Image 1 (tube, rainbow, N blue to C red):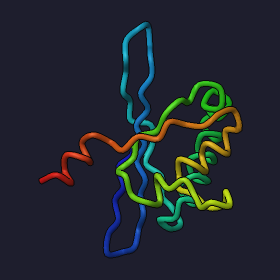
Image 2: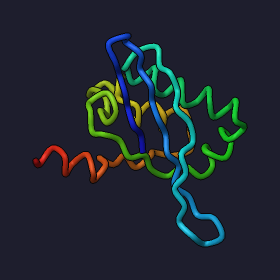
Image 3: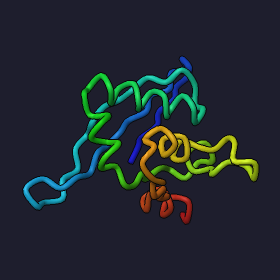
Amino acid sequence: MHIHFSDAADLHIFGCLLQFLHNDVVTVQFWRAMELDDQSAQSHADTVENWMKLDNIWEMAQRHLTSVATDGASNMISQGNAKGTGGGFCKLLSDKIESRDLICLHCMAHQLQVCE
């Protein structure tokens, strides 16, 4: 799940929450707010990978990450073109973890916001 902020200073901050089982209890924890170079899918994926490596959780993510929920923007959920190139954050992150395809979800709260 993510929270994305941008302001007049052209700062792009990507906030990530992690949801996981801890002692058989579903737990949601704020992980990190990360400054992005731009709003591209590549910037999102590279930044998450870099910070996960710095926080020593990249290998765990490669083994256990199963889904990602986003705001539904095309830079987050695009599956790329027919040639298999391009794609949004979820596709690029799935490619980076190399073990399987991630389930990419459009966050329910963001879907409800669009309905208003």
